[in-house]
View 1 (tube, one colour):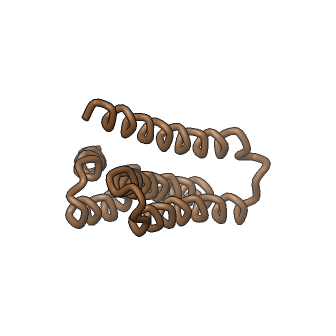
View 2 (view 1 turned 135 degrees about the vertical axis):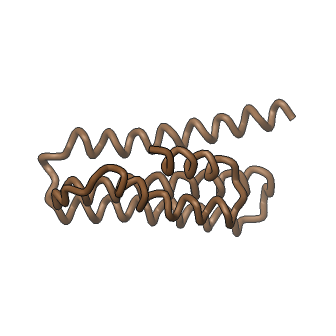
Amino acid sequence: MLRLNVIRVGFLMGVSLLLAAIIYFFAANWKGLDRTDKILISVGIMILFYGVSFIFSKVKIMLGHHSFLAAIFLVGGCIAFGVSVALLNQIYNSHADSYELFLIWSIPAVLFAFITHFNPFYLLSYVLIHL
């Protein structure tokens, strides 16, 4: 059991570092990217996370690891959705209040929490609603 938890923590840290690298990429190359490039990259990353989650949910080789990875990539896709919403707000300078952005981001987080019953979605939903 301890070995399985160590593996899961490693997977979680890997996905977290991948998300941090994506955010850092946008921060470092903000002025060098066009509007369309920013939007296409952010939406592509979001679709990539959701697609990888779907693929891992359908792979039946190692059931324990792949189901956990599918759930973690689904959480990563939800976080990438929030980054995309914030990026669109930044690009088009919509002057939306931050609570509106967090409310928009909380909609898929709450839906995923009710559908999947995965604890990180409950935590993300709680944090987003209370911001």
